[in-house]
Length: 294
Image 1: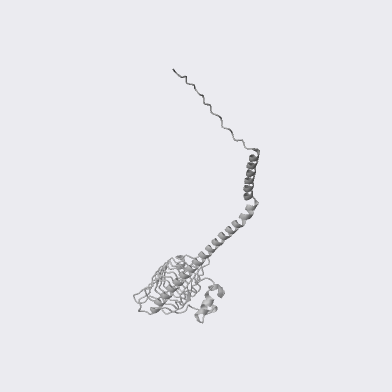
Image 2: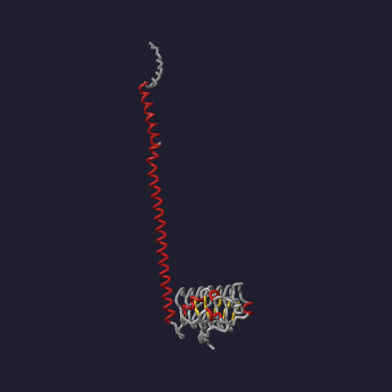
């Protein structure tokens, strides 16, 4: 006997949706309002009052550290510069001692490229020295002797005598090719039989100096003062560079002593020689006679 199968339809019972009670909904709303109040609290004026001094302190600290770093850099640079200057001065003093030890005729004088800037070279014997590319800027050269000796020629090629000052300096028979003697004061100095090729004498005081028989090719006398210089000719003038400030020996000597050379007065007093402006401007006066090799 067959039994009938009875089909049972299962129907899903829908879940019950959660409907919060009025009390729970009110609690959630209050919590949301509290969160909003917290956010606005930190984003508001209290946060500004709290963060402002922190930011200001950070800026001040950063600026202080930056300034201190700059001060340290400047101090370090200054100390480094002072050390370099001390080292340079020490080298120049050592070079001066080397030169003084050889200040006699028979000594070898290999002074090429030597740094003697600012040194006192008064009355030093440079005869027969090789001073090519040497630095003699702002040196004192009162009565210094650069003459050629025997078969040894004194070379000053491409040397710098910029700003040197002195009087009665003897350059007889020396070779000065491309030498810089700008802004110098060389009163009553001697350049007899000297080779002056492209030598720079810009703004240099050469009052009373002697250029007799000098071989002068292309020098620059712009702004130079050659008042009462000997051996300077108009032919030399034609082969030289000069400007309207250049004072030639044949120019009118209607100058006050201070017009002769700006540094002439103080320098002549330093030499201890009985020279004054009236002697320099006196037409009967002649340049001082220095020892010359015949």
